Length: 559
Image (cartoon, rainbow, N blue to C red; front, side, top):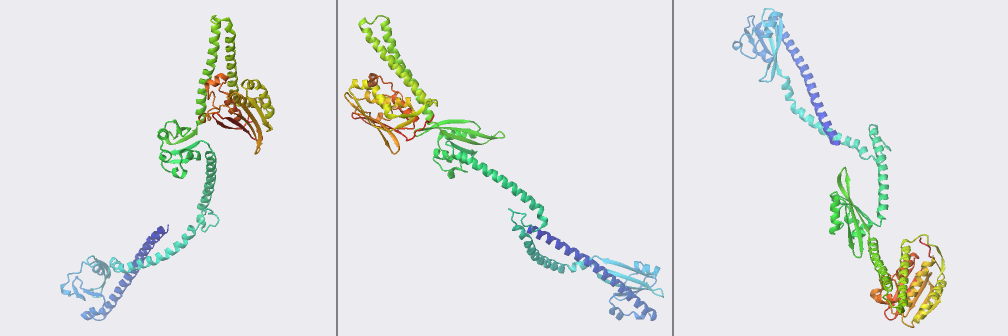
């Protein structure tokens, strides 16, 4: 802006000086020329009077030298009688000269003739004397162009001087003029208006500031909402354009083991170098939906990538990562459960069918029918127990809200279980002792009964002849503990992590002899989860096993 002002003012000053110089020069030249012409006329009048009062002898060489003008005396026929500048005999006839013609006709005449070669002009004034001769007085001056040319140096110096002075003056003035504009508070443009001419502009700036502030507040709110949602997601989220990462939340950073500052606004390859992840990203950026499942350690993750299209053109991609380990394990567990159920149900059914077929075809002697019937009854009981356990596990999996929760005294429940299993324990010579008390637990009575029953029953089944079982109840650090210990066969270290799986048996032959279904400890595990209890196992082969149920002080129903 300052430069434009300087340029424009400089041009304006130069033009003004030139125009003023030309106008003044022309006025002064015209005035000077008028004075010169009048002087020639006056001089001619003086000479005329002198000639008429004396004689032609007045015109001598001395008079011509004293006069500043050229004096010429011309006869009636145009012959030059006297010339103060030239020899009269050498001059041609002047009868055709315009001023001479006018003087002969009108008594006086004048003319101006230019010399382009000398860049001069000559003013001629002629007057007829009383004797008929013509007196002509002439004076030569520079032409207007020559006059202007002679002043060009002065004009240049004048222009340069004025422009230099004007430059510093304008520089100072424009600095003062622009300083309030440069120091203007654009955040509050109407607070102090230095120039009223700027008020319409400042009003628009003020309105724009209000709109921008409103938009910024909306963007900030949207950004905070976006961060609140994405940063608290348990699933990973990555947003990219065609080349760079635009956003990556905490879950995705943990999944890919990267930091946001190392990825955002940088190449997509910074996120992951896994081949499958790169493949789904590239397909999404090409406009195709893609997904895959990858494994990291013991966890399984599903990666889903969708293209982001604007006006039909792919501008980026959204990548979502979530943990599907539990889902995968559940599916695997269901498959194994179905296979195990089919196998477990098939075995007793085949036994029952085989025994019944033998009896039906008369292939069993009458004395052995009772033994075969006993085996059929055993297999049917085993099948019934298996079905009941499967139904019980299904209910626990569903976590039905219809299950009745109540306060249950674990000591009373344990006493009932001991009475139920008394005969079974006596047959194996196993003694059962109960010590302490832990109070009541808030839960589902029949589920708690199944849990304690299965643990006690397993302690009898996997004990030694004439063995022992100790059941202890206590309170510790505000929690309620129920523990069953035995001096039985124990569990190997490699089997301890799997005994709570469905249908898993440490000793299949022993389980079949005792009628176990392989679901008892699985029911215990699910029941403990349902009641927010912890299970602790301590066992050594040949020395026995100890299993503890650790209940919270106030266990509330989850269903």
